[in-house]
Length: 266
Length: 299
Image (cartoon, rainbow over all chains, first blue to last red; front, side):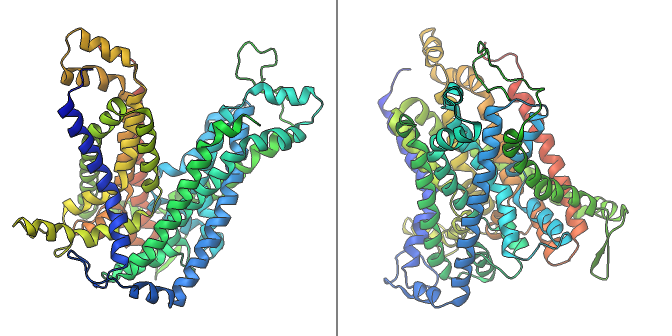
Protein backbone atom coordinates (compact mmCIF):
# COMPACT_ATOMS: atom_id res chain seq x y z
CA UNK A 1 0.00 0.00 0.00
CA UNK A 2 1.20 3.50 -0.71
CA UNK A 3 2.53 4.99 2.48
CA UNK A 4 1.45 8.53 3.08
CA UNK A 5 3.50 10.06 5.87
CA UNK A 6 0.82 12.36 7.28
CA UNK A 7 -1.67 9.52 7.35
CA UNK A 8 0.81 7.33 9.19
CA UNK A 9 1.41 10.04 11.77
CA UNK A 10 -2.33 10.46 12.29
CA UNK A 11 -2.82 6.71 12.64
CA UNK A 12 0.08 6.53 15.08
CA UNK A 13 -1.40 9.30 17.19
CA UNK A 14 -4.74 7.54 17.08
CA UNK A 15 -3.20 4.34 18.46
CA UNK A 16 -1.57 6.36 21.24
CA UNK A 17 -4.96 7.92 22.00
CA UNK A 18 -6.59 4.49 22.29
CA UNK A 19 -3.86 3.34 24.66
CA UNK A 20 -4.29 6.54 26.66
CA UNK A 21 -7.99 5.79 27.00
CA UNK A 22 -7.35 2.21 28.04
CA UNK A 23 -4.68 3.04 30.61
CA UNK A 24 -6.10 6.37 31.86
CA UNK A 25 -8.24 4.86 34.62
CA UNK A 26 -5.34 2.76 35.90
CA UNK A 27 -2.89 5.65 35.93
CA UNK A 28 -5.33 8.16 37.44
CA UNK A 29 -6.29 5.73 40.15
CA UNK A 30 -2.64 5.39 41.12
CA UNK A 31 -2.08 9.16 41.10
CA UNK A 32 -5.24 9.84 43.09
CA UNK A 33 -4.28 7.28 45.70
CA UNK A 34 -1.44 9.63 46.76
CA UNK A 35 -3.57 12.75 46.59
CA UNK A 36 -4.89 14.51 49.70
CA UNK A 37 -8.17 15.63 48.11
CA UNK A 38 -11.33 13.77 48.91
CA UNK A 39 -12.71 14.57 45.43
CA UNK A 40 -9.61 14.32 43.28
CA UNK A 41 -9.31 16.59 40.28
CA UNK A 42 -6.68 18.78 38.63
CA UNK A 43 -4.82 20.73 39.81
CA UNK A 44 -3.83 17.97 42.19
CA UNK A 45 -3.81 18.47 45.93
CA UNK A 46 -0.87 17.65 48.14
CA UNK A 47 1.01 14.41 48.25
CA UNK A 48 -0.39 12.23 50.98
CA UNK A 49 -0.31 8.65 52.13
CA UNK A 50 -3.39 9.19 54.25
CA UNK A 51 -5.56 6.76 52.26
CA UNK A 52 -2.98 4.02 52.48
CA UNK A 53 -2.70 4.55 56.23
CA UNK A 54 -6.47 4.27 56.50
CA UNK A 55 -6.62 1.13 54.40
CA UNK A 56 -3.76 -0.54 56.25
CA UNK A 57 -5.44 0.18 59.59
CA UNK A 58 -8.67 -1.49 58.56
CA UNK A 59 -8.88 -5.09 59.78
CA UNK A 60 -11.73 -5.86 57.35
CA UNK A 61 -9.46 -5.08 54.42
CA UNK A 62 -6.70 -7.26 55.80
CA UNK A 63 -9.18 -10.09 56.12
CA UNK A 64 -10.45 -9.52 52.59
CA UNK A 65 -6.89 -9.48 51.26
CA UNK A 66 -6.21 -12.78 53.03
CA UNK A 67 -9.41 -14.24 51.55
CA UNK A 68 -8.44 -13.01 48.08
CA UNK A 69 -5.03 -14.61 48.41
CA UNK A 70 -6.48 -17.96 49.46
CA UNK A 71 -9.15 -17.88 46.76
CA UNK A 72 -6.88 -16.93 43.88
CA UNK A 73 -4.13 -19.39 44.80
CA UNK A 74 -6.54 -22.29 45.24
CA UNK A 75 -8.43 -21.39 42.08
CA UNK A 76 -5.20 -21.22 40.11
CA UNK A 77 -4.18 -24.73 41.18
CA UNK A 78 -7.58 -26.34 40.57
CA UNK A 79 -8.24 -24.56 37.28
CA UNK A 80 -4.78 -25.33 35.95
CA UNK A 81 -5.12 -28.98 36.90
CA UNK A 82 -8.52 -29.21 35.18
CA UNK A 83 -7.24 -27.27 32.19
CA UNK A 84 -4.19 -29.49 31.84
CA UNK A 85 -6.25 -32.70 31.94
CA UNK A 86 -8.65 -31.39 29.33
CA UNK A 87 -5.98 -29.96 27.07
CA UNK A 88 -4.07 -33.23 27.14
CA UNK A 89 -7.19 -35.31 26.48
CA UNK A 90 -8.02 -33.08 23.53
CA UNK A 91 -4.45 -33.24 22.21
CA UNK A 92 -3.95 -36.96 22.60
CA UNK A 93 -7.32 -38.61 21.99
CA UNK A 94 -10.15 -38.63 19.56
CA UNK A 95 -13.36 -39.84 21.07
CA UNK A 96 -17.08 -39.69 20.59
CA UNK A 97 -18.84 -36.60 21.94
CA UNK A 98 -15.63 -34.63 21.83
CA UNK A 99 -17.58 -31.56 20.71
CA UNK A 100 -19.86 -31.50 23.76
CA UNK A 101 -16.85 -32.41 25.92
CA UNK A 102 -14.96 -29.33 24.78
CA UNK A 103 -18.09 -27.18 25.00
CA UNK A 104 -18.40 -28.23 28.64
CA UNK A 105 -15.13 -26.54 29.53
CA UNK A 106 -15.15 -23.68 27.02
CA UNK A 107 -18.68 -22.34 27.49
CA UNK A 108 -18.57 -20.66 30.92
CA UNK A 109 -16.78 -17.45 29.82
CA UNK A 110 -19.47 -16.78 27.22
CA UNK A 111 -22.16 -16.62 29.90
CA UNK A 112 -22.47 -13.22 31.59
CA UNK A 113 -21.02 -13.23 35.09
CA UNK A 114 -24.19 -11.95 36.66
CA UNK A 115 -26.04 -15.01 35.35
CA UNK A 116 -23.31 -17.36 36.56
CA UNK A 117 -23.49 -15.56 39.88
CA UNK A 118 -27.21 -16.16 40.24
CA UNK A 119 -27.00 -19.77 39.07
CA UNK A 120 -24.05 -20.53 41.37
CA UNK A 121 -25.71 -18.88 44.36
CA UNK A 122 -28.94 -20.81 43.85
CA UNK A 123 -27.23 -24.17 43.23
CA UNK A 124 -24.63 -23.89 45.99
CA UNK A 125 -27.34 -22.90 48.48
CA UNK A 126 -29.38 -25.86 47.34
CA UNK A 127 -26.55 -28.33 47.97
CA UNK A 128 -25.51 -26.53 51.15
CA UNK A 129 -22.21 -25.17 49.90
CA UNK A 130 -22.81 -21.43 49.67
CA UNK A 131 -21.46 -18.59 51.76
CA UNK A 132 -18.02 -20.12 52.26
CA UNK A 133 -14.61 -19.32 50.89
CA UNK A 134 -14.58 -22.63 49.07
CA UNK A 135 -17.82 -21.60 47.31
CA UNK A 136 -15.90 -18.81 45.59
CA UNK A 137 -13.03 -21.17 44.78
CA UNK A 138 -15.40 -23.66 43.16
CA UNK A 139 -17.14 -21.00 41.09
CA UNK A 140 -13.87 -19.38 40.03
CA UNK A 141 -12.41 -22.71 38.96
CA UNK A 142 -15.35 -23.19 36.59
CA UNK A 143 -14.86 -19.69 35.20
CA UNK A 144 -11.09 -19.84 34.77
CA UNK A 145 -10.47 -23.44 33.70
CA UNK A 146 -11.09 -22.51 30.02
CA UNK A 147 -8.23 -20.01 30.14
CA UNK A 148 -5.95 -22.68 31.59
CA UNK A 149 -7.07 -25.15 28.96
CA UNK A 150 -6.43 -22.67 26.13
CA UNK A 151 -2.94 -21.74 27.33
CA UNK A 152 -1.83 -25.35 27.80
CA UNK A 153 -3.49 -26.58 24.62
CA UNK A 154 -1.58 -24.00 22.58
CA UNK A 155 1.63 -25.23 24.15
CA UNK A 156 0.82 -28.85 23.35
CA UNK A 157 0.26 -27.80 19.75
CA UNK A 158 3.96 -27.08 19.54
CA UNK A 159 4.95 -30.51 20.74
CA UNK A 160 5.96 -32.97 18.10
CA UNK A 161 3.33 -35.73 18.44
CA UNK A 162 6.06 -38.26 17.72
CA UNK A 163 7.88 -37.21 20.87
CA UNK A 164 5.42 -39.15 22.97
CA UNK A 165 5.62 -42.29 20.83
CA UNK A 166 9.39 -42.03 20.85
CA UNK A 167 9.34 -42.16 24.64
CA UNK A 168 7.13 -45.24 24.55
CA UNK A 169 9.36 -46.93 22.01
CA UNK A 170 12.27 -46.35 24.36
CA UNK A 171 10.35 -48.33 26.95
CA UNK A 172 8.65 -45.64 28.98
CA UNK A 173 5.14 -46.33 30.22
CA UNK A 174 2.39 -43.82 29.52
CA UNK A 175 2.64 -42.54 33.09
CA UNK A 176 6.42 -42.18 32.91
CA UNK A 177 6.14 -40.39 29.60
CA UNK A 178 3.64 -37.99 31.12
CA UNK A 179 5.96 -37.30 34.01
CA UNK A 180 9.24 -37.02 32.17
CA UNK A 181 8.23 -35.70 28.76
CA UNK A 182 4.85 -34.02 28.65
CA UNK A 183 4.74 -32.22 31.99
CA UNK A 184 8.26 -30.78 31.57
CA UNK A 185 7.38 -29.72 28.04
CA UNK A 186 4.25 -27.93 29.30
CA UNK A 187 5.92 -26.35 32.31
CA UNK A 188 6.04 -22.77 30.96
CA UNK A 189 2.39 -23.01 29.96
CA UNK A 190 1.50 -24.43 33.36
CA UNK A 191 3.12 -21.47 35.08
CA UNK A 192 1.50 -19.11 32.61
CA UNK A 193 -1.86 -20.67 33.35
CA UNK A 194 -1.35 -20.48 37.12
CA UNK A 195 -0.64 -16.76 36.92
CA UNK A 196 -3.43 -15.98 34.49
CA UNK A 197 -6.14 -17.88 36.37
CA UNK A 198 -4.95 -16.34 39.64
CA UNK A 199 -5.25 -12.88 38.08
CA UNK A 200 -8.77 -13.50 36.78
CA UNK A 201 -9.85 -14.93 40.12
CA UNK A 202 -8.20 -12.09 42.03
CA UNK A 203 -10.26 -9.52 40.11
CA UNK A 204 -13.59 -11.28 39.82
CA UNK A 205 -16.30 -9.54 41.82
CA UNK A 206 -19.79 -10.49 40.58
CA UNK A 207 -19.79 -14.19 41.39
CA UNK A 208 -17.73 -13.63 44.55
CA UNK A 209 -20.20 -11.04 45.73
CA UNK A 210 -23.14 -13.41 45.30
CA UNK A 211 -21.70 -16.60 46.74
CA UNK A 212 -19.26 -15.32 49.35
CA UNK A 213 -21.70 -14.56 52.15
CA UNK A 214 -19.66 -12.81 54.82
CA UNK A 215 -16.30 -13.90 53.42
CA UNK A 216 -15.64 -10.91 51.19
CA UNK A 217 -12.68 -10.79 48.89
CA UNK A 218 -10.95 -7.51 47.98
CA UNK A 219 -13.05 -6.74 44.87
CA UNK A 220 -16.21 -7.34 46.89
CA UNK A 221 -15.01 -4.89 49.53
CA UNK A 222 -14.36 -2.37 46.76
CA UNK A 223 -17.83 -3.00 45.38
CA UNK A 224 -19.36 -2.38 48.78
CA UNK A 225 -17.36 0.81 49.42
CA UNK A 226 -18.13 2.18 45.97
CA UNK A 227 -21.86 1.74 46.46
CA UNK A 228 -21.77 4.42 49.14
CA UNK A 229 -19.94 7.36 47.61
CA UNK A 230 -16.58 8.55 46.40
CA UNK A 231 -14.08 7.25 48.88
CA UNK A 232 -10.43 7.69 47.96
CA UNK A 233 -9.61 4.56 49.93
CA UNK A 234 -10.74 2.73 46.82
CA UNK A 235 -7.84 4.25 44.90
CA UNK A 236 -5.40 2.94 47.48
CA UNK A 237 -6.91 -0.54 47.43
CA UNK A 238 -7.23 -0.23 43.66
CA UNK A 239 -3.54 0.57 43.24
CA UNK A 240 -2.64 -2.53 45.21
CA UNK A 241 -5.11 -4.62 43.20
CA UNK A 242 -3.83 -3.20 39.89
CA UNK A 243 -0.21 -3.87 40.75
CA UNK A 244 -0.98 -7.40 41.84
CA UNK A 245 -3.05 -8.41 38.86
CA UNK A 246 -0.85 -6.60 36.35
CA UNK A 247 2.17 -8.42 37.74
CA UNK A 248 0.35 -11.73 37.43
CA UNK A 249 -0.77 -11.06 33.86
CA UNK A 250 2.71 -9.88 32.83
CA UNK A 251 4.26 -13.01 34.36
CA UNK A 252 1.65 -15.15 32.60
CA UNK A 253 2.55 -13.55 29.28
CA UNK A 254 6.29 -13.82 29.84
CA UNK A 255 6.05 -17.51 30.62
CA UNK A 256 3.77 -18.00 27.66
CA UNK A 257 6.14 -16.19 25.31
CA UNK A 258 9.20 -17.97 26.68
CA UNK A 259 7.93 -21.28 25.36
CA UNK A 260 9.71 -21.14 21.99
CA UNK A 261 13.10 -20.73 23.58
CA UNK A 262 12.67 -23.09 26.48
CA UNK A 263 10.79 -25.55 24.31
CA UNK A 264 13.98 -26.43 22.49
CA UNK A 265 15.36 -28.30 25.47
CA UNK A 266 12.25 -30.26 26.33
CA UNK B 1 -3.40 -50.16 24.59
CA UNK B 2 -4.57 -46.89 23.22
CA UNK B 3 -2.98 -45.92 19.98
CA UNK B 4 -0.92 -42.75 20.09
CA UNK B 5 -2.57 -39.61 18.90
CA UNK B 6 -0.97 -38.30 15.81
CA UNK B 7 -1.60 -35.16 13.87
CA UNK B 8 -0.14 -36.45 10.64
CA UNK B 9 -2.66 -38.32 8.59
CA UNK B 10 -0.06 -40.63 7.03
CA UNK B 11 1.01 -41.96 10.39
CA UNK B 12 0.50 -45.70 10.65
CA UNK B 13 -0.52 -45.33 14.28
CA UNK B 14 -3.47 -43.03 13.87
CA UNK B 15 -5.88 -42.98 16.75
CA UNK B 16 -9.06 -44.96 16.80
CA UNK B 17 -12.10 -43.11 18.17
CA UNK B 18 -13.99 -46.28 19.02
CA UNK B 19 -11.30 -47.87 21.14
CA UNK B 20 -12.19 -48.33 24.81
CA UNK B 21 -10.26 -45.82 26.89
CA UNK B 22 -7.90 -47.27 29.49
CA UNK B 23 -7.31 -46.02 33.02
CA UNK B 24 -4.66 -43.58 31.83
CA UNK B 25 -7.00 -41.99 29.29
CA UNK B 26 -9.83 -41.75 31.80
CA UNK B 27 -7.59 -40.11 34.40
CA UNK B 28 -7.21 -37.12 32.09
CA UNK B 29 -10.65 -37.15 30.57
CA UNK B 30 -12.94 -37.51 33.57
CA UNK B 31 -11.99 -34.72 36.03
CA UNK B 32 -13.41 -31.92 33.93
CA UNK B 33 -16.56 -33.92 33.13
CA UNK B 34 -17.37 -34.45 36.79
CA UNK B 35 -16.37 -30.96 37.82
CA UNK B 36 -18.35 -29.16 35.14
CA UNK B 37 -21.40 -31.42 35.49
CA UNK B 38 -21.62 -30.67 39.20
CA UNK B 39 -20.57 -27.04 39.19
CA UNK B 40 -21.51 -25.73 35.76
CA UNK B 41 -24.30 -27.78 34.20
CA UNK B 42 -25.87 -28.28 37.65
CA UNK B 43 -26.18 -24.56 38.42
CA UNK B 44 -27.46 -23.67 34.97
CA UNK B 45 -30.09 -26.43 34.93
CA UNK B 46 -31.10 -25.63 38.49
CA UNK B 47 -31.57 -22.00 37.50
CA UNK B 48 -33.92 -23.09 34.73
CA UNK B 49 -35.87 -25.25 37.22
CA UNK B 50 -35.87 -22.41 39.72
CA UNK B 51 -37.70 -20.14 37.30
CA UNK B 52 -40.75 -22.33 37.96
CA UNK B 53 -40.44 -22.26 41.76
CA UNK B 54 -42.67 -20.21 44.03
CA UNK B 55 -41.75 -17.69 46.69
CA UNK B 56 -43.98 -17.64 49.75
CA UNK B 57 -43.24 -15.46 52.77
CA UNK B 58 -39.75 -14.76 51.42
CA UNK B 59 -39.03 -18.48 51.20
CA UNK B 60 -38.53 -20.33 48.00
CA UNK B 61 -40.56 -23.52 47.60
CA UNK B 62 -40.01 -26.03 44.83
CA UNK B 63 -42.91 -26.14 42.42
CA UNK B 64 -43.71 -26.18 38.75
CA UNK B 65 -45.72 -23.04 38.11
CA UNK B 66 -45.53 -20.54 35.31
CA UNK B 67 -46.27 -17.62 37.61
CA UNK B 68 -42.83 -16.07 37.40
CA UNK B 69 -42.73 -16.33 33.65
CA UNK B 70 -46.16 -14.83 33.12
CA UNK B 71 -45.51 -12.13 35.71
CA UNK B 72 -42.19 -11.04 34.23
CA UNK B 73 -43.07 -11.34 30.56
CA UNK B 74 -46.31 -9.40 30.84
CA UNK B 75 -44.71 -6.47 32.60
CA UNK B 76 -43.87 -3.39 30.61
CA UNK B 77 -40.78 -2.68 32.71
CA UNK B 78 -39.23 -6.00 31.74
CA UNK B 79 -39.59 -5.37 28.02
CA UNK B 80 -38.49 -1.74 28.37
CA UNK B 81 -35.37 -2.98 30.06
CA UNK B 82 -34.94 -5.80 27.52
CA UNK B 83 -34.98 -3.52 24.47
CA UNK B 84 -32.94 -0.87 26.21
CA UNK B 85 -30.25 -3.43 27.04
CA UNK B 86 -30.20 -4.78 23.49
CA UNK B 87 -30.08 -1.24 22.14
CA UNK B 88 -27.23 -0.03 24.32
CA UNK B 89 -25.22 -3.25 23.89
CA UNK B 90 -25.62 -2.89 20.11
CA UNK B 91 -24.55 0.74 20.31
CA UNK B 92 -21.58 -0.32 22.41
CA UNK B 93 -20.62 -2.96 19.84
CA UNK B 94 -20.87 -0.51 16.94
CA UNK B 95 -18.80 2.08 18.85
CA UNK B 96 -16.14 -0.41 19.92
CA UNK B 97 -15.81 -1.87 16.42
CA UNK B 98 -15.55 1.58 14.81
CA UNK B 99 -13.22 3.08 17.42
CA UNK B 100 -10.96 0.03 17.38
CA UNK B 101 -10.76 -0.31 13.60
CA UNK B 102 -8.31 2.50 12.73
CA UNK B 103 -6.05 1.45 15.59
CA UNK B 104 -6.15 -2.20 14.59
CA UNK B 105 -5.59 -1.20 10.96
CA UNK B 106 -2.53 0.82 11.92
CA UNK B 107 -1.16 -2.00 14.09
CA UNK B 108 -1.82 -4.66 11.47
CA UNK B 109 -0.52 -2.88 8.38
CA UNK B 110 1.66 0.05 9.39
CA UNK B 111 3.42 -1.10 12.53
CA UNK B 112 6.50 -3.28 12.69
CA UNK B 113 6.06 -6.80 13.94
CA UNK B 114 7.66 -6.02 17.27
CA UNK B 115 5.45 -2.94 17.79
CA UNK B 116 2.47 -5.13 17.03
CA UNK B 117 3.56 -7.73 19.55
CA UNK B 118 4.16 -5.07 22.20
CA UNK B 119 0.79 -3.48 21.56
CA UNK B 120 -1.01 -6.79 22.03
CA UNK B 121 1.09 -7.58 25.10
CA UNK B 122 0.07 -4.22 26.60
CA UNK B 123 -3.60 -4.57 25.70
CA UNK B 124 -3.89 -8.00 27.30
CA UNK B 125 -2.90 -6.50 30.66
CA UNK B 126 -5.93 -4.20 31.15
CA UNK B 127 -8.29 -6.81 29.77
CA UNK B 128 -7.46 -9.04 32.73
CA UNK B 129 -7.12 -6.22 35.24
CA UNK B 130 -9.75 -5.09 37.75
CA UNK B 131 -12.53 -3.80 35.57
CA UNK B 132 -14.39 -2.72 38.70
CA UNK B 133 -11.63 -0.41 39.92
CA UNK B 134 -11.13 0.98 36.44
CA UNK B 135 -14.81 1.85 36.32
CA UNK B 136 -14.62 3.55 39.69
CA UNK B 137 -11.66 5.52 38.39
CA UNK B 138 -13.77 6.74 35.45
CA UNK B 139 -16.44 7.74 37.94
CA UNK B 140 -13.97 10.13 39.54
CA UNK B 141 -12.49 11.32 36.24
CA UNK B 142 -15.84 12.05 34.60
CA UNK B 143 -17.58 13.64 37.58
CA UNK B 144 -18.85 17.21 37.49
CA UNK B 145 -15.63 18.56 39.00
CA UNK B 146 -13.41 15.76 37.73
CA UNK B 147 -10.32 15.78 35.56
CA UNK B 148 -12.07 15.90 32.21
CA UNK B 149 -14.29 18.82 33.13
CA UNK B 150 -11.35 20.62 34.73
CA UNK B 151 -9.37 20.30 31.51
CA UNK B 152 -12.33 21.42 29.42
CA UNK B 153 -12.70 24.34 31.83
CA UNK B 154 -9.20 25.57 30.88
CA UNK B 155 -10.35 26.03 27.31
CA UNK B 156 -13.61 27.58 28.43
CA UNK B 157 -15.93 24.64 27.91
CA UNK B 158 -18.30 22.77 30.16
CA UNK B 159 -18.79 21.56 32.73
CA UNK B 160 -20.68 18.73 31.14
CA UNK B 161 -22.70 16.10 32.92
CA UNK B 162 -21.20 12.82 31.86
CA UNK B 163 -22.10 10.57 34.74
CA UNK B 164 -25.57 9.07 34.97
CA UNK B 165 -25.99 9.31 31.23
CA UNK B 166 -25.76 6.83 28.38
CA UNK B 167 -22.42 8.41 27.59
CA UNK B 168 -21.13 7.31 30.98
CA UNK B 169 -22.41 3.79 30.41
CA UNK B 170 -20.69 3.68 27.03
CA UNK B 171 -17.37 4.84 28.49
CA UNK B 172 -17.63 1.92 30.90
CA UNK B 173 -18.44 -0.54 28.12
CA UNK B 174 -15.48 0.74 26.08
CA UNK B 175 -13.22 0.26 29.10
CA UNK B 176 -14.37 -3.32 29.25
CA UNK B 177 -14.39 -4.21 25.56
CA UNK B 178 -11.95 -1.99 23.67
CA UNK B 179 -8.73 -3.85 24.56
CA UNK B 180 -10.20 -7.18 23.46
CA UNK B 181 -11.74 -5.77 20.27
CA UNK B 182 -8.49 -4.07 19.23
CA UNK B 183 -6.57 -7.31 19.86
CA UNK B 184 -8.99 -9.48 17.88
CA UNK B 185 -9.20 -7.03 14.98
CA UNK B 186 -5.43 -6.60 14.83
CA UNK B 187 -4.74 -10.33 14.84
CA UNK B 188 -7.38 -10.92 12.18
CA UNK B 189 -6.13 -8.25 9.83
CA UNK B 190 -2.47 -9.10 10.39
CA UNK B 191 -3.24 -12.57 9.05
CA UNK B 192 -4.54 -11.33 5.72
CA UNK B 193 -2.37 -12.20 2.76
CA UNK B 194 -0.65 -8.90 2.02
CA UNK B 195 -0.33 -9.82 -1.67
CA UNK B 196 -4.08 -9.57 -2.12
CA UNK B 197 -4.04 -6.00 -0.83
CA UNK B 198 -1.04 -5.21 -3.00
CA UNK B 199 -2.88 -6.64 -6.00
CA UNK B 200 -5.99 -4.56 -5.34
CA UNK B 201 -3.87 -1.42 -5.10
CA UNK B 202 -1.96 -2.26 -8.28
CA UNK B 203 -5.22 -2.74 -10.10
CA UNK B 204 -6.12 0.82 -9.24
CA UNK B 205 -8.31 0.31 -6.20
CA UNK B 206 -8.42 3.40 -3.97
CA UNK B 207 -7.28 2.97 -0.34
CA UNK B 208 -10.79 3.34 1.08
CA UNK B 209 -12.22 0.95 -1.47
CA UNK B 210 -9.43 -1.51 -0.65
CA UNK B 211 -10.46 -1.42 2.99
CA UNK B 212 -14.13 -1.80 2.17
CA UNK B 213 -13.93 -4.40 -0.59
CA UNK B 214 -10.78 -6.35 0.22
CA UNK B 215 -9.70 -6.03 3.83
CA UNK B 216 -13.11 -6.16 5.53
CA UNK B 217 -14.45 -9.13 3.52
CA UNK B 218 -11.19 -11.02 4.07
CA UNK B 219 -11.31 -10.46 7.82
CA UNK B 220 -15.05 -10.98 8.11
CA UNK B 221 -14.87 -14.02 10.40
CA UNK B 222 -12.56 -12.39 12.90
CA UNK B 223 -14.47 -9.12 12.85
CA UNK B 224 -17.79 -10.84 13.52
CA UNK B 225 -16.28 -12.84 16.37
CA UNK B 226 -14.90 -9.62 17.88
CA UNK B 227 -18.35 -8.06 17.60
CA UNK B 228 -20.01 -11.07 19.25
CA UNK B 229 -17.61 -10.94 22.20
CA UNK B 230 -18.15 -7.22 22.51
CA UNK B 231 -21.92 -7.65 22.51
CA UNK B 232 -21.83 -10.48 25.08
CA UNK B 233 -19.60 -8.46 27.41
CA UNK B 234 -21.69 -5.27 27.17
CA UNK B 235 -25.01 -7.11 27.36
CA UNK B 236 -24.04 -8.90 30.55
CA UNK B 237 -22.19 -6.15 32.40
CA UNK B 238 -23.86 -4.46 35.35
CA UNK B 239 -21.01 -2.27 36.55
CA UNK B 240 -20.96 0.34 33.77
CA UNK B 241 -24.72 1.01 33.63
CA UNK B 242 -24.94 0.90 37.43
CA UNK B 243 -22.07 3.20 38.40
CA UNK B 244 -21.51 5.33 35.31
CA UNK B 245 -25.01 5.23 33.85
CA UNK B 246 -26.67 5.73 37.20
CA UNK B 247 -29.08 2.86 36.39
CA UNK B 248 -31.81 5.39 35.59
CA UNK B 249 -32.94 2.94 32.96
CA UNK B 250 -32.10 -0.45 34.48
CA UNK B 251 -30.45 -2.91 32.13
CA UNK B 252 -31.26 -6.62 32.44
CA UNK B 253 -28.19 -7.37 34.61
CA UNK B 254 -29.28 -4.60 37.00
CA UNK B 255 -32.77 -6.10 37.00
CA UNK B 256 -31.28 -9.45 38.03
CA UNK B 257 -29.26 -7.74 40.73
CA UNK B 258 -32.23 -5.85 42.16
CA UNK B 259 -34.55 -8.83 42.00
CA UNK B 260 -32.03 -11.11 43.70
CA UNK B 261 -30.48 -8.85 46.26
CA UNK B 262 -33.36 -6.72 47.50
CA UNK B 263 -36.48 -8.63 46.62
CA UNK B 264 -35.33 -12.19 47.41
CA UNK B 265 -37.18 -13.06 44.21
CA UNK B 266 -34.64 -15.55 42.87
CA UNK B 267 -37.15 -17.29 40.56
CA UNK B 268 -38.01 -14.05 38.81
CA UNK B 269 -34.33 -13.20 38.48
CA UNK B 270 -33.91 -16.63 36.92
CA UNK B 271 -36.53 -15.75 34.31
CA UNK B 272 -34.56 -12.64 33.37
CA UNK B 273 -31.32 -14.63 33.30
CA UNK B 274 -32.79 -17.28 31.01
CA UNK B 275 -34.18 -14.64 28.66
CA UNK B 276 -30.71 -13.11 28.52
CA UNK B 277 -29.04 -16.43 27.77
CA UNK B 278 -31.53 -17.31 25.04
CA UNK B 279 -31.00 -13.90 23.45
CA UNK B 280 -27.23 -14.20 23.62
CA UNK B 281 -27.19 -17.70 22.14
CA UNK B 282 -29.48 -16.61 19.32
CA UNK B 283 -27.24 -13.67 18.52
CA UNK B 284 -24.03 -15.66 18.86
CA UNK B 285 -25.28 -18.48 16.62
CA UNK B 286 -26.55 -16.07 13.98
CA UNK B 287 -23.25 -14.25 14.07
CA UNK B 288 -21.19 -17.42 13.83
CA UNK B 289 -23.34 -18.70 10.97
CA UNK B 290 -22.74 -15.41 9.17
CA UNK B 291 -19.05 -15.47 9.95
CA UNK B 292 -18.44 -18.91 8.48
CA UNK B 293 -20.89 -18.65 5.60
CA UNK B 294 -19.14 -19.34 2.35
CA UNK B 295 -20.10 -16.90 -0.26
CA UNK B 296 -19.50 -13.62 -1.86
CA UNK B 297 -16.39 -12.60 -0.01
CA UNK B 298 -14.06 -10.34 -1.89
CA UNK B 299 -15.17 -10.07 -5.46
